[in-house]
Amino acid sequence: MDRMAEPAVLENQVFENETKCLWVFAYGSLCWKPGFSFSKAVPGCVSGYQRRFWQGNTTHRGTEEQPGRVATLVEDSEGQVYGVAFSVHGETALSYLSQRECEQGGYISKFTDFHPSDGAPFTVLLYVATPLNPLWLGDADTEEIAHQIINCRGPSGHNVEYLIRLANFMRNFFPDKHDPHLYNLEEKVLNLVEMRKLCLKTLMGSGEGCITFIRKSNSRESSPDDERRRDENRVETFEHTARVPGKKLRCLNI
Image 1: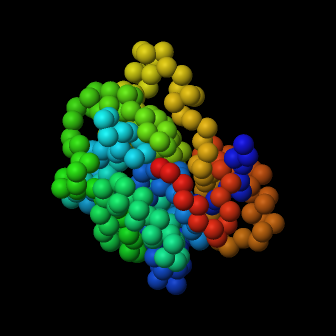
Image 2: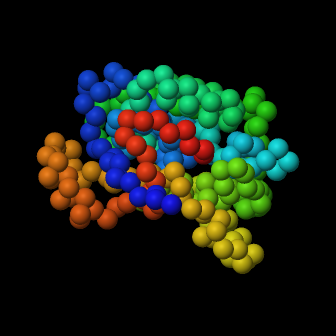
């Protein structure tokens, strides 16, 4: 299986004319497996929220009998959540996201301000789950959530994969931003993997459909030759890649 692809670049800068198109904020599996084509990806954060594994999932990382736990955003006036804003075009991507996040995932859509790592804030669309949706699991002790995650698997893979890939992504691209809920949960789950003598590589799956990101070293415009030379020297990449044809939507599972 050929999973290699040209890396996607996380840009540092968004120009004013680019903010007029639709941007979608990713804070969960969309960070490492968006499943739709995008013209630009920018790291940054949204304010007024915290990331929590309070949403149940029965279509991708769990089953009706044993729902998995996936990330959502909960309101917190002092909170900040880091992730990626994707610039998307066309109704196909929106239809795909609506099915993936709303119809199958139990999320609703909202608009909020996104603060890129470099530059002025702009509006993004984000998907959040609320306590009113039927898949809502809500708060629980970290140990309890960890046990739910390690025991759940769905059509798209093990729930452990979802958690670990998200933690790895955040650690790689936001190393100075601590997310206690995410990293404490990761630690608990990895301890359970060790205690139960499970094979983490097996739990993580093949990585099919995952995307590689490279963070752009600076914001100045570069020639293709400059970019090729930089690619040879870049080491800040996210593990596991998949071939996603440019400018073509691929409806991938979470």
